Length: 220
Ligand SMILES: C[S@@+](CC[C@H](N)C(=O)[O-])C[C@H]1O[C@@H](n2cnc3c(N)ncnc32)[C@H](O)[C@@H]1O
Image (cartoon, rainbow, N blue to C red; front, side, top):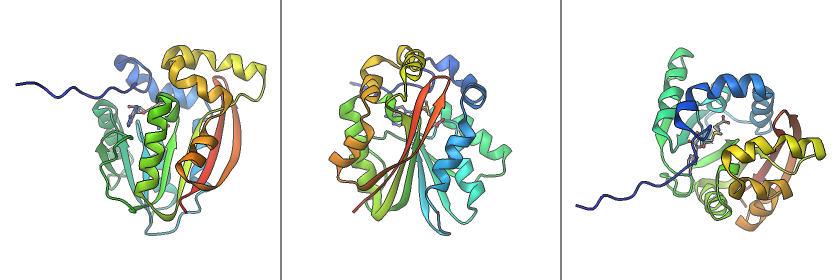
């Protein structure tokens, strides 16, 4: 019998054996907490709202979402079962087992339409080809409720020449096809093309691996 081919994705640090080093590297090497707390705060979450951490990796953002607003419901989705196992262990250690994790692909979200109040995603969109970035944004729009918000944090147009050079190691690691559009700045254009409105860049961060920008957009 013919097996269905598995869909491809780029693991957190490209090679699976590096996944276990993801948390210490990102926590110490970047302003991880500062950037993610900014993303959480820009949402002005209300009790009872349903939120998703898309491509949640080890679940740091999902955990921050729950810790900062105990009344919200948090789900994490990722394509990589190994990193989801790390996320679940981390939630157990932090007594945050109410966060529900789902294995799945961003281009075909396993959720019904008009369900979420907020979708968050960090350090992920640069892992996708332009075609998949757009498919993902369309899926996010589908699963959001009317008036729902999409919060994105990712590498985008460098603030200066130094930040451009700093981004090169990420490009060598994650690949030039998926990362190059971010050098020009692609996220606001894709949000617009998908149909999101009131698109706003809320903050920029300089890190040792380049410029990251945070965005907020609404489903009309
Ligand atoms: C660099 S990590 C970022 C993880 C986390 N969001 C963070 O901020 O630390 C990128 C994540 O995207 C996941 N991923 C890659 N392609 C995916 C896809 N098509 N659908 C869902 N997850 C995907 C990887 O497994 C990995 O966990």
